[in-house]
Amino acid sequence: MPSSAVDKSIRVYYRGNKYDIPEEFATRMHPGGKDILMRYKDSDITEDFEKTRHTVDAVVMLNSWTAGSVDYAIPMKSVSIFESDNGCEETETKESEKTKRWNCLAIAFGIASIVAAMQMRKH
Image 1 (cartoon, rainbow, N blue to C red):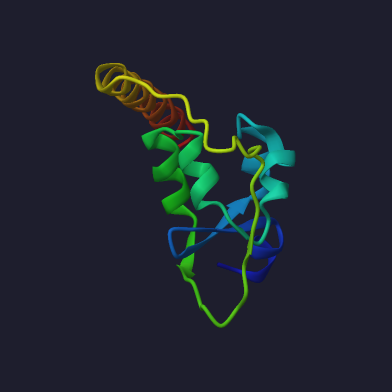
Image 2 (image 1 turned 45 degrees about the vertical axis):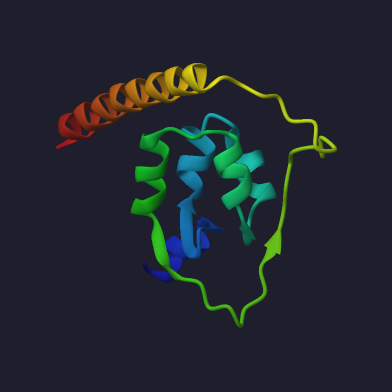
């Protein structure tokens, strides 16, 4: 990635990999807005990314911004925007969990289709 593109990106770490999220995406398209991503700049997002149950489309987009593997000699900070729940997690039945996952998957494919159609229109 050219240095000008890296300068205009938000570096995050997810599951042992580095990602450079374009600031333009963060500003214009990220549902949580740029502010939420800026809180995670140069941080490991793995735990909170998975807690928020991002869609398959979000994971595909993130993977498209891979900047390489983590050099563990470089210290990373860990950030969480979630409050500690003191071990009081809400329990859900397996069936409702499966339903939620299928709904997320269906939504992700719908969004991916729209994004693909928009990209094809540009070309």
